[in-house]
Length: 151
Image 1 (cartoon, helix red, strand yellow):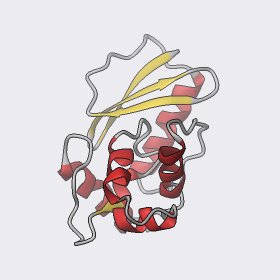
Image 2 (tube, helix red, strand yellow):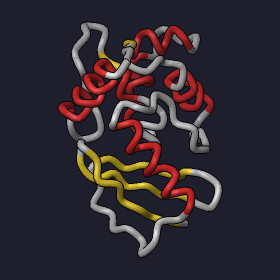
Image 3 (cartoon, one colour):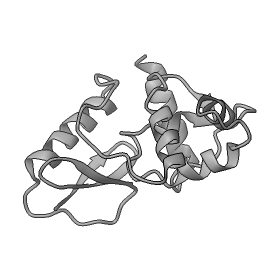
Image 4 (cartoon, helix red, strand yellow):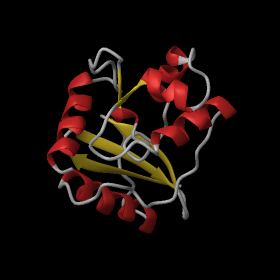
């Protein structure tokens, strides 16, 4: 397993990989990088650099979708949200066939191990307010604005 830190416009992003996949992304991390990033970690960092410069709208690095069947259905639905667009927690609950599960959708988003790669930042409240994201709602606003600018 490899651990690397990517310095981004929203702060340090921790990246954990094995030889074949991305295992975890941590926004605002305090992790320390291994001496040399793995090939997979370097690939993730290249894609993140492209994303933050507006040149990448979809990540291609491989990653697992983990969790309960419900959480996996939510995370898969997040992958279908187009770059530069937002949907509500209610919209995701309806998409997965469980319209009363708005809060559970929020929990699935909040426990997403692969933010950015699985774009939970594109999910907002029904009243169009941002809601929470990682530890910093301003980070969520930055990401939404970045994508709208480069859409």
